Structure formats: structure tokens, C-alpha cells
Image (cartoon, rainbow, N blue to C red; front, top):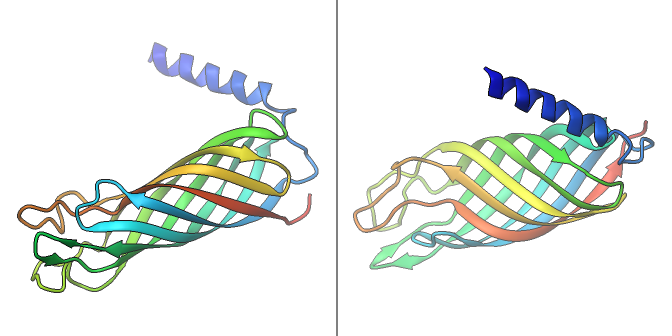
Length: 187
């Protein structure tokens, strides 16, 4: 319990310290962007491209909360005789961002559930069903100004062992880069 109180106190101090970091004229915004990445590990998919749409409210000038969704398309690849199918991810996630300064470095994450869409089978020459989704996380770190965000990300949908085929673990995850444009919604 003592550790919890210390973490809570530290979070309060950090939040209060960042209260003057962001421009208070732009509290609500829609973020629209795109990203590309390489699959890790790359058993059943090779690469991903995606679009992001989110709403963010700056709770304090240095701390934003919101909701995030979008679509990421993972390209299937052949692996030891398996013709793996493409798969899409549609996240339903909470958005958390921390902005230490008005312009510059930022970090955060999207966390929620990732719905998997596409062919019902993992591979076109397999009888193993594709999972429906799982726990979704997308941490990112990057550079921001009033209008743009440029970032490095890791995106992952955790499916457990659903979709695994002998000799191949099922994966929907990538490391990539992206950008977003901020559309202000007013004060």
C-alpha cells in the first residue's frame, strides 16, 4: 500500500509539473494519421500499413486522454508450406498521452481490444480458425508540435495460442513509424 501511495503522489507531482507544458488554447482535437511497420515476430505476417483516428482531450496541458480506433492491414506470408492469409485489426482503445513540453518529445499508448477481421482461416491451406481478437496495445514515442505528431510505435494484439499451427505461432504485431495531424475542435 505504501508503494501505491508513492506512485500516486509521484503521478500527481508529474501532472502538476506539466500543467504549463502545453498550449491551453487547443484542448480538444481529432487526430488523423497513418503508419507502416514490419511484423515481429514474422511467422505468419510480413508487414503492416494502417490509418489511425482518435479523439483527445487535454485534461491538463501536458496530459491527454481520449479514444482511438483505425484500421491496420497485415500482409500474410508463406511459411514452410502455409499460405497465410492477410488479417486486419480494428482497435477500440483508450488513448493516453504525456507531453512534457509544448513542442518536442512526447510518449503514450493506446490500450484496449483489437478486433481481427479478414479470412476465417489462418492460412488458405489450413483448417485452423483465425482468432476474433484480443488485448490491444500500441505504445509510441515521438515528436509533436501544434499540428503534427511523428512517432515510432509498437502495435500488438495478444491472442494467446489461438491461431497457432504446428511450427508457426500466430502473430499480429509490428514495429513501425507513423504520423498524425491534429484537427482542433475548439477550447
